[in-house]
Length: 163
Image (cartoon, rainbow, N blue to C red):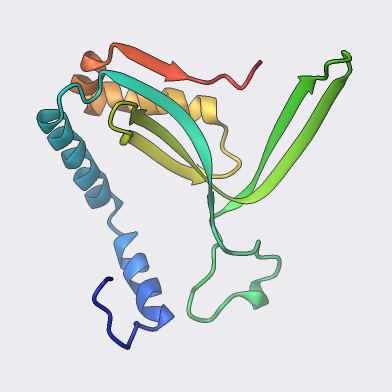
C-alpha cells in the first residue's frame, strides 16, 4: 500500500528521523497552522462549531524503572508518565461507586471542528497533565495565533465529566 516491496528500514532509521524531526518543533507547528488556515479558506463553516476534549495516546513502551534497561538504539520512551482518572457515580439504589484508572502514556488535548471532524488546535503532554488547564492554554494560544477561527466560532462544546 505504501510502495514498500521487500524491505522496510531498520528501527534505528525511524528513531533517527524522529530525533531529527523533534529538533524543529516550530516547523511542525507552522505546518499545522498553515493547514488550519487553508481548511478555513476552503471548507465552508470550518470553525463555526468547535469542541474540546482530551484523550490518552498509547506509547507502546513500558515505564523505565532502571537506566540499564534502556535500548541502545534509543527505541524507548522516557517522556511519557502515568495518568490517573477517577470515575464516580450513584447506583440506582443510591449507593456511591468509584473506579480509578491508571495508565502509562501521553495525553492529547484537542480542539476540533465538529462538522468536519478535523483538528483546529492541539497539545500533546504527559498523561499526568490535567485537561482543564491545558484547555485554557489552548484557547489563549488560539486567541493569539488563530483569531479568525475563534471569531468564526458560534458554538463551543466541552464535557465537564460530571453527570
